[in-house]
Length: 182
Image (cartoon, rainbow, N blue to C red):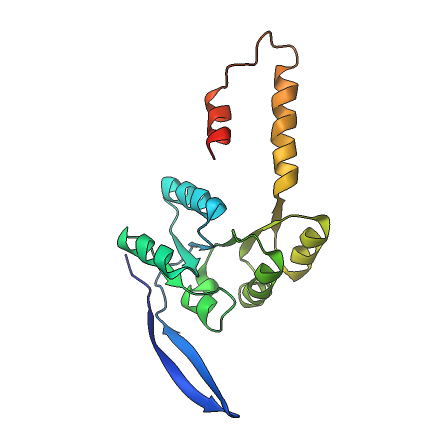
């Protein structure tokens, strides 16, 4: 399993500014998922990908988290998915999915637009918190946008509907326990 790491920054002087851009090693993964963000949502998505045997790599800004994942044998690129060259290092041209698990859809929009232009066949999944954010991400090329509040409401409604005529709903089922332990 290849390990992806930032190498020493390259310092170039251009128009009086110093640009520090890390060199990234390109993954050899193909037909893989690129998971951006390893917070509460990303962790659960990574678990699903792992259990399904789907090759994936994680893009994570928090160096401590990236180092922990790497130590556990997970392919990781440290950095922000919008930084130049990062999606290319993640081999977005040959990826199957790009999953944005970060909570900021406007930040996601930056790399979603680039990924869509680079790989028109890429399945792009993102998260949003409002209808405006959903529309924004759709315009930039996301195929599926999950709005957390709607998913929570859907799950609550499904539970209510499946238990309307049930004599006792005080004992949670396994799926209910899983939902409450998150």
